[in-house]
Structures are given as C-alpha cells and as structure tokens.
Amino acid sequence: MFHFDWSVISRNLPFLLGGVSVTLYIVGAATGMGLVIGLMVGLLRGMGNRWVDLITGWYIEIFRNTPILVQIVWFYYVLPLVTGMPGLQASSSCIISIGLNAGAYLAEVFRAGIQAVDVGQMEASRSLGMSYLRAMALIILPQAVRNVLPAFVNTGVVLIKESSQVSFVGVLDIMHRGDMLSTDSARPIEAYTAVAAIYFMVCYVISKSAGVLERRLALSR
Image (cartoon, one colour):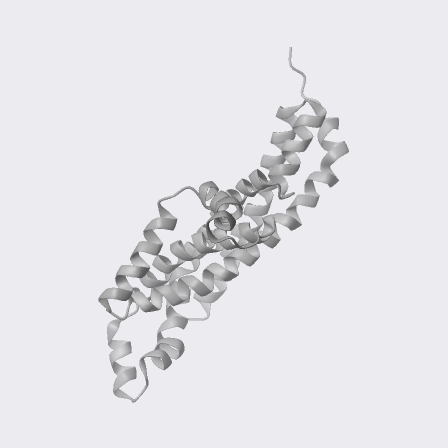
C-alpha cells in the first residue's frame, strides 16, 4: 500500500521555495511588459483606424489562440534559427513570450474597461480643449483601471500558473524544481503535491491582496 512520505517535502522544502522568486521574477517582468503592450494596443484599437485594427487584431488572435508552451519554445529555439541572431537566455525568452501573451489578453481587458466609461466624458473633455491622449490619460484611464482590476488580477493569477511551462526550457522555477525532486527522490506524488501547495499559496495571497485593494478603491470613489 502507498505511504505518503512527508519527510520528502520537509527535507526539500527550501529547495522548492527557491523557485518562488524565479517564478515571481519572470511573471512580474512579463506582466510589466504585458501591461505596456496591452495598454498601447487597447488605446490603438479604440482609435478606429482600419489598418491598426487589422494588425492589432491579428496580434491578439495569434497569441490568444496558440499554447503558451509553443510560444516559449518558438522564442527560445525557433527565433534564433529563423533570424540568425544569437539565442536569448532561457529566462529572457520566457519573459518576452509570456509578456506578449499577457499583452494580448490585457489589450482586450483595457479596451473593455475604456468602453465601460461613459462616452460623454470623452466628449466633454474634448470640448474643453483636451487632446485625445490627454483626456484618455487624465479622465478615462483612471476610471478604466478601476473597472478592469478584477480581470487584471485574474490574468496575473493565470500567468503564474501558466509560467510553469518555462520549466520546459530549463528555467529553475517552482515546477522545474518539482520535476527534479520527483526524479531524484522517485516520489512524484509528494513532489507534485508540494508544488501544487506552493502555487496555491502564491496565487491565494495575490488574489486576497488584490481583493483588499479593490475594496479600498471602491470606498475611495
């Protein structure tokens, strides 16, 4: 009969927890990149230019409709072969691929948040002499950010879980350390149970912290 060996987890917990900082670094950098791209694309898609809508639309469709593992592999292995450029470090290629993936999702999140703001506010801002970008930055975006905060947090949590795919290219994140422990100890159930618990705690803390922030923002309105 199978016996769950807790000592496998207790002995190797510091090793597994060492992957948390790697995971948060990659996801944090990728999220920052995704925020910039998503905001830019979301704003561009709201300007009504047919060619801009076509290009940004294809960008969103490509990154939303292909697996993130394929994107990571493509940027790490395929891009240097196609371009002849030196290959990126594994962590850098993962940040770029996850960042572009995040940008595709966040672009639609920002666009929905902007559209949720009463259109009359933009018209009133323009009538006061504000440019489109100034009105967007000072009037529309602050309200849109509040509207999209839950969706943004959900995207961040999804990215943390999807970042486990970076283990495929050798990044020593939580999942890759779990793979190593599973192989070295021949105790995969214990190893992946610990990995699942760590991912749960990281995502839970982020979700609860964001919930507190959301309630404070709601009270400040």
